[in-house]
Image (cartoon, rainbow, N blue to C red):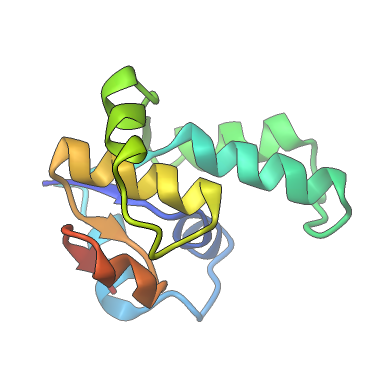
Length: 128
């Protein structure tokens, strides 16, 4: 199964944060699943790092490279089709990074791993 991680799901998995639910952890850790990361996630974290809201002990590039490569995750590039879905997406969620992840999940018809209950307002499968 292909699954797309919300930004916090990636961060909590990579940092072994206990806030990650057991069902989410199970799906992410399942080697049979193809785990995808949106560029919206590293863009969101880059902004938080630059504002001093998310400190890193290594460089930004090292952090993401390790998180993606060590876990055999894949990047789901943002396409015109994803942006096209975004154009007609209801405004249940106002965060632009979450809206792009939601658009990607809807367009690709894949579940998204997220604690954010607002994702449930969209026509997608949310794992939590």
